[in-house]
Picture 1 (cartoon, rainbow, N blue to C red):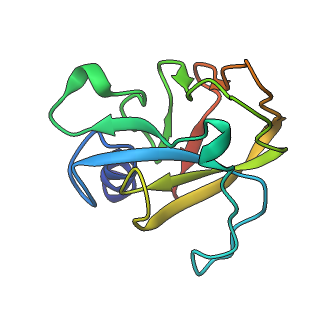
Picture 2 (tube, rainbow, N blue to C red):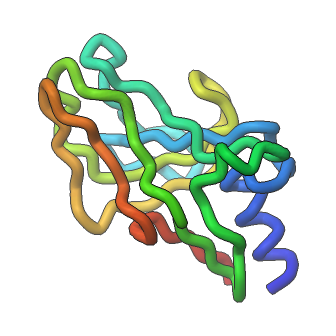
Length: 133
């Protein structure tokens, strides 16, 4: 599991593997394996990717330490307050930049998120889980 743990910690920003900072996004469509097909909500409705972790900055870390090829968030992950509807978000996205950048990983949300004006979308502790095997 050593390699899987190192990759997961790099994908979460605990270590610098892909980028100094890693961002979490949301999508209203299912991404394709080639990194296309995702649809992020509109920035005009307050959507913005949120920092998942920055290597070397412990206070920014939202994910715990990877063990046995798995990692989960040990802190609540908050997105900015919605200023309009973001639609039905069905997938999470892991990027190496806060805008643009490369889609490193994605997965289906167990419970969809439907942000509307005045709400703060969040992912509660231990609800964001990634595994490599």
